[in-house]
Image (cartoon, rainbow, N blue to C red):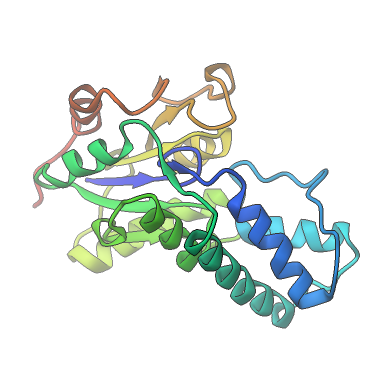
Length: 231
């Protein structure tokens, strides 16, 4: 069984640290701004898409060379932010659920997120989680959209374990309609939480919607209810 956690709004909140670091990265690459995000959708989206939309909004180039420079500077500024004033705050119940699921036999934990690998792991570590508890992941740089990420995670599960994981043995935990959509389109189960920006009525289609992840025993039981023993 594979359990995939979204990061922002599901496991933790950074209170705008990521967007502030992105704006600073844009200034490093293109010169002084300001680089505001008005009209740029960020909820549940891949950082690659957010960068492209932000660049186009401000009339900046979007070639891959520029993208790699931006990505490096974004990582730099996010790292510096967490070393100084920025906060990555674990959301209620998330640390306990991660630790509980790690003790469940036959369960592999992973990340499925719109973050880049390096900045996603940075946020996770800054919130007090051990990034190494997540054996694999699918990130912004791994697909063209969020729907393309679950197959990446499932392929990495097979590479790691030497056996495939069927979609019905995959649970995606997230806080946005895009998390729900990527689970359903790939035949996975979805546990949705309202700890992000979206109320329950916007998380239609999720197999279960909860206010937060504090009911550790109940949620762990629900997640592993369809678990199969490894062949």
